[in-house]
Length: 158
Image (cartoon, rainbow, N blue to C red; front, side):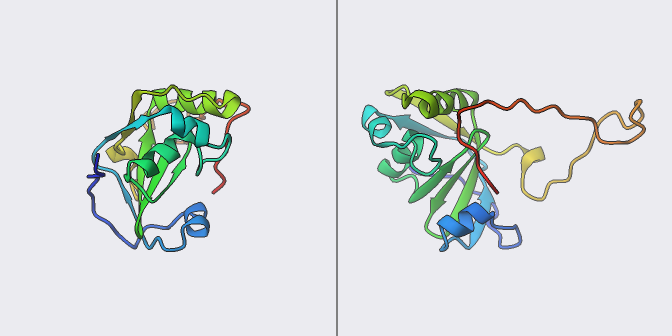
């Protein structure tokens, strides 16, 4: 399946350090405007490397199917690199669960189709954050966000 993610490719957005360091040819970053589907096979899981966002089973599947030249698979975001362009996708819940399974036990359910989601308008690069409830008890302050951290899985350092 061809990667048909189209959007306004731009140089004005910051290229994340992890992409600059691992893929120095990347000069443009963009957000995916269409979701894509990737099938992971048993050979991808066997060739993959646990806790390695660039060599996991899903990254291997994307490269095997020529969807990308390289990939960085994170628990919340996915970067697919093709030529000098890096495209950012949302990690679906099913992919996030398989990442956890793969990082712990090197098992990624083969034969299934996994969705790499398009980026929501509120999550696009350059989007401004608007907080609801500015008239609430917080008096315009940002609401407190509690993040759950899952142990024994990859961490993307930016």
